[in-house]
Structures are given as structure tokens and as C-alpha cells.
Image (spheres, each protein chain N blue to C red):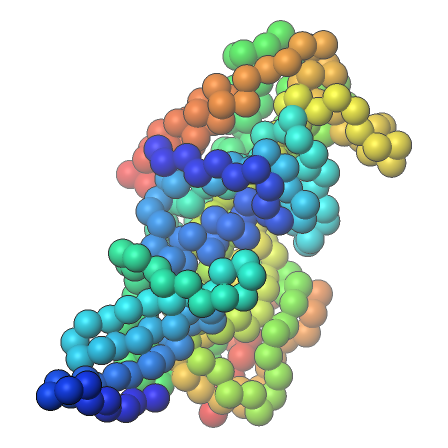
Amino acid sequence: MIIKNYKILDSTNLKAKELARRGAGAWTVIVAEEQVGGYGRKGTSWFSPKGGLYFSIILPKSNVEDLQTLTILAAFICAKTIKENFNLEPFIKLPNDVWVNGKKVAGILTENVIGKDVKLSVMGIGLNTNIEKFPKELENTATSLKIELEKKVSNIKLLKQIVQSLKEQLKTISE
Amino acid sequence: MKTEIQIGDKVYQIEILEPQENLLKVKVNDKEYFFTKNELGELSFIEDFKPSLKETEIISGASSEKEIKSPLPGVISAIMVKKGEEIKPGQKLVTLISMKMENEIISEGYGKIKEVKVKENQFVKSGDVLIVLD
């Protein structure tokens, strides 16, 4: 697993697509401490201040159906990772979000570039880990692990567990 | 663009191509060099370029397909091309949102748009024709 760390990015998905176009290999992980243009489906913005875990994975070339399955599984994997590490009961809001105590804690966005076949795929995951406080317009709908647990969590530990689980899952569905 | 330059006694065949958006390929005799624009818009050399989009195949000729079809069901969220436009390999044509993913549909060859068969926010099935080429 190659992890590329950035202090600040527009969006880890955009960076991952750029690096994949330049030939970066599958399972390269792009991490940003902060995103200034983080986005979800249909371009909705994803609040990405310092403290959160924002990363994108360059996925191996796969068929579209497998990528779709993997994206749904990514929400399950995020929820499972949260459940196994902390005393929380995450809830999967299909297809792409994970909630804790009725508020969003993680979101997933897979992006593909397709010609005659899939040319490249990246999966971006935003996980609200150590965010202290959300702006007024989000505080009723978003939460973070730090807010729920009242303690700091390890971003790198969660990142490695999630990527490892995704790798294993894709291997299983592609077989 | 192809040209020939002579430095001293040596003659170099130079070919410059743009196989994808934001990717410049400079071929000097048989060796290929790739450049991209960095965040500041400056050209930067890419060491150890691996053509992830099989660009050698893509740039080899005009598109043989006359219709570009939807690879999966979803909703068209953006259309980047219009009737009469010349397209090139790697160019973004439409964005399609399926329930779980955003998909950029790109051109695999050179061509001219004869007709765009879909509108924004339209639902399409897998295999529906999106664009017809001349």
C-alpha cells in the first residue's frame, strides 16, 4: 500500500484521478489533512477541515458491476471498522453514507472514467474523525467520532484497516 | 505535429502529440517523453510514465465506433460536447451518475459529433445510445 500524504488538496479524488492518469498504480492511497473542494455525489460539498480523514484509493481495473458492489461494500467496511474499534453502533445509509447516532459520519464517492471499458477508477472516502465542531448548518446532520467518543482517534490506523478490508473484498468479488 | 531538427551531424525526428487532455507526448526518434501541466499551469516532465489509458492504442486512429453507448444505467448529470464538435481521444463527453458512482464517459478516438441523443437529468439504460458520430 503506497500512501501519499498532502497537507491540503482541492479534493483527494481529483488528485487520485490525475495521478492514475499519469500511471500511478492500483491501491495508491492519496490522503489530505484538509480539502478545500471536497465533494460528494452530484458535486455536493463535503466539509473537510483539519482533523478529519480524507482519502482516495486508485482502484485496480475492474468491471463496472464489481466497482458498484465494492462501493456499497465500502460503506459496510467503514461501519464495521468504526464498530470494531469503538463502542459505537453505526448505521448504513444506503448507498454511500455511514451514520452514528442519527448523524452522518462518513461518505463514499467512487468515480470512474469509462471509454470502451473502465479506464480508471478512484474511490474517495471522507470520515469525520477528529473534527471538533461543525458549522451551524451542519451540526444537526453531521457528527464526528471525536464528538461521539469525546476522545481523539488514530486516522492512520483507521485508514489502513479500511484500505486493507477493501482490498480483501475486491479480491473476493472479482473471483 | 511532426518536424525534423538537425544538431551538428545528427538529425532528430520530433513528433508532438496531445494524446489526452493535459498530457503532452514528445517523441524524439524512437524515444517518448511525457509532460503534464502542474497546478500552476507550468509544463512538467513526467518521469517513468506508464500509459494507464493505453494511449498508444487510443491515438492510433479514428474511432471505429459510430455510436457511444451508456455502459450502465443512470442519470446524465452533465454533457460536455455539442453537435458539430470535433472530439479527440480521452476527451470527456458526458457524466453519468449511477446510484453509487459518478462516471465520466470519454472518447476513445477522433471523431465529429453528429448528434447528442440525451439531455441533462435524463435517465438512461445500459446500452442506450448517448452520442452519434459522423
